[in-house]
Image 1 (cartoon, rainbow, N blue to C red):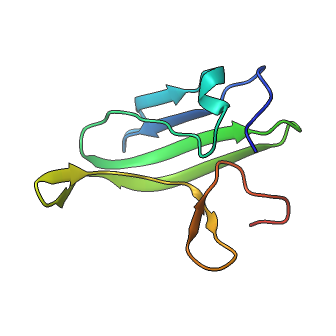
Image 2: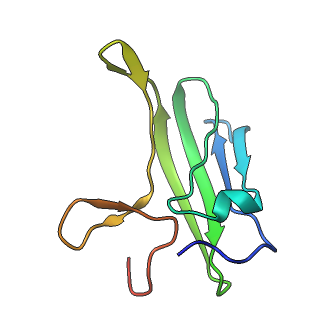
Length: 105
């Protein structure tokens, strides 16, 4: 369900090994009108700590704090990179989701 609140922002930041903020993303209201929410940050290749926080229309707040490696992966003549947050699908697979449903872990 798209977020209907407009009095907050979803945020994400990449921190280097020294704890310095290297890149950040702060949502605008139009970023939260469809699912999945998409964000992009530019950072040099390397190891980072990704910290992100999001809220829903009921005022629930969730955070993700994860160690990630930023690198470009070869895919034929292209190089790709992606991080997708979500939950396992009911029938297997993956469902991109910014906020887990109640009772999800």
